[in-house]
Length: 64
Image (cartoon, rainbow, N blue to C red; front, side, top):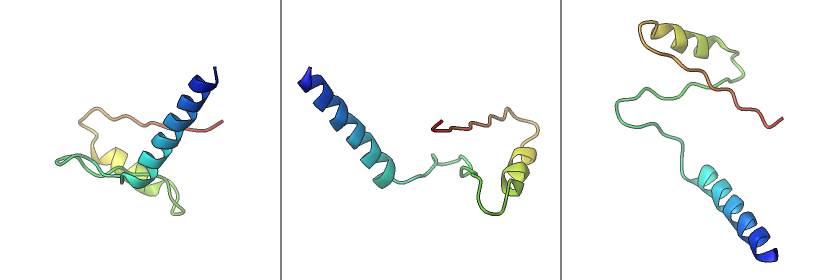
């Protein structure tokens, strides 16, 4: 039981480290991701409306 718990802790730590240090980039040919900032939702709205002829997906993740 302790071994499973230790493995889970190590995997979570590795996932956090990969998220923090791996960088945040998109594949070549894909526009950069747009996120909310202190400017409000205007940049996100502009990016969403710019591609009206294609499929668009908004993903909102929340820790709660």
